[in-house]
Length: 66
Image (cartoon, rainbow, N blue to C red; front, side, top):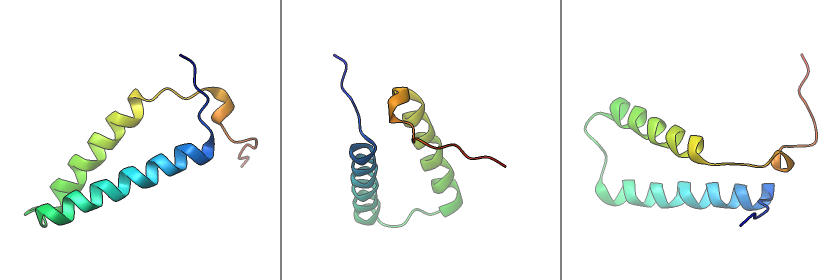
């Protein structure tokens, strides 16, 4: 099963995931320690991104040069 993921679909999925997470956070109320909650959310997001496999064709057609 080799599906092509376009940048547009990837962006839509990320926006949708962020909206769902924001809705869950709002429904649960603000956490006691905002810094610890932000750190935990960043860790979970990093793990989720690390598990995602993207083909090289998904990369933009330009490169940054310093």
